[in-house]
Length: 139
Length: 140
Image (cartoon, rainbow over all chains, first blue to last red; front, side, top):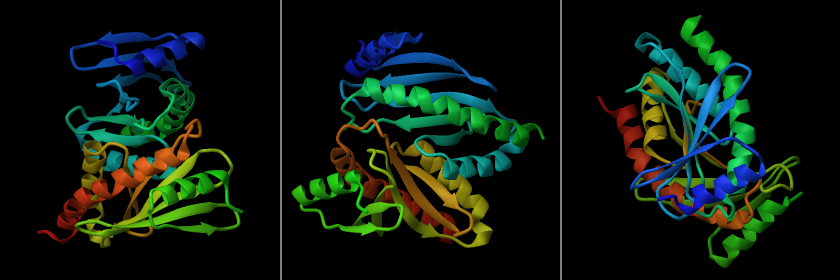
């Protein structure tokens, strides 16, 4: 089923003429939107698992890295978390990747407007972080 | 000066009978509320630097750690960031401390309500995280 926050976000994205796709399973619905930045392409997924406005934003695999670089990537991810507001960078050990997360508070009144703010912020943040991640992994 | 979000949060905390104080500095104003948890005591800062609803929520120095534990703490902090929603754990390398961050978006319509939500969530998160951090610092 398509939860109400997914519907709200999709309506707002329609107003803004943004391209997106909706996926639904038995337990969650998600709106997926691809953003092309200067350095990379990211897929932003807004997940809902109930009818609250508690939406999870996930950007999976912003970068991938070899196991040998884990310690350095972990240190850089912490530096990025100190530097950038709103989102959280995490190392996904199972996938050897860096993911970017944000959780909408349940008290969010307008999930569509919050999603639009994140569509504005998150690609810029990832695009700024990306060269530093790449230098750490490949330098 | 006291920014409007600080006032809105203070008004809402008054309604909820939370204890708090307001601090104003040259460029910021903040509401500070202390919470005693099972494992620790924290101060939650709700910091504004303009009249938007864009508020930085910070718990400073949840724990401190010795320099030789930095690598271990970075691993534990990453695991905490994966485990807990809403909170962003960060290692302040200069201070050798772990802080908790959350940022309220400027498009938030009711910043008082968002602050109450964080006031309820963050102590539980901090209290769950604290033993994991302590074991990392003091364990074998």
